[in-house]
Amino acid sequence: MAILVAPSILAADFSNLAGEVRRVEQAGADWIHCDIMDGHFVDNISFGPAIVGFVRKQTKLRLDVHLMIEHADHYLPRFVDAGADSITVHVEPEAKHDVGKTLQQIRDAKCRVGLTLNPETDFKLVEPFLDEIDMLLVMTVHPGFGGQPFRADQMEKVKRAANWNRSRDRQMDIEVDGGINPQTAHVSIQNGANVLVAGTSIFHTRDYAKAIRHLRGGD
Ligand code: DX5
Ligand code: ZN
Image: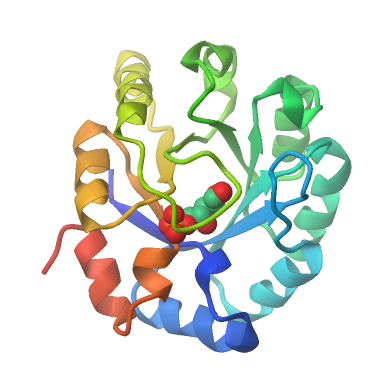
């Protein structure tokens, strides 16, 4: 599977968000990762559907919306209306929604269906849903903040997802998110990941094209 890079705009300069989105698109990004935080499911507040709608107007790239919120089923229609192409929800009970129903809701809205688990969460929780999703997001940090160190112990889950793909002859995307830089991207790809979310290692550099090439393993 092609290695895809999804810059996380959480690390972008919001005073020039339009310019930042266009710049990473020109630099070779494949998707734009939008981190939605509600201050309840995670201990931080980021942005909502209005900003996703604004980003939609700047780019034709796939908008990869990561919902770190409670009651995603209630709010997700607003992200669909804002132009999300892919919506990822959390499997933990603390997310306070019926996971199976929410995944179907995303599917019915004609968006790509993503499911994610925190580092503390057992892979067993996502297994019943693997047949119903287009993408599994393995969090490599506890969600809520950018700039955290990568958790290599989560590669076990990436391997299990890759094995699951092979056993079913499926091509479910396997995304990693948190502390991704050229070294940890390499480790993640070796274990079976094909989508790399990166905030700090792209937006906190001078040359976005070089940063994106390095994440893919190029020079
Ligand atoms: C964290 C978010 C990540 C984060 C990645 O909860 O889901 O997408 O913004 O940022 P870096 O790449 O700086 O770890
Ligand atoms: Zn994210």
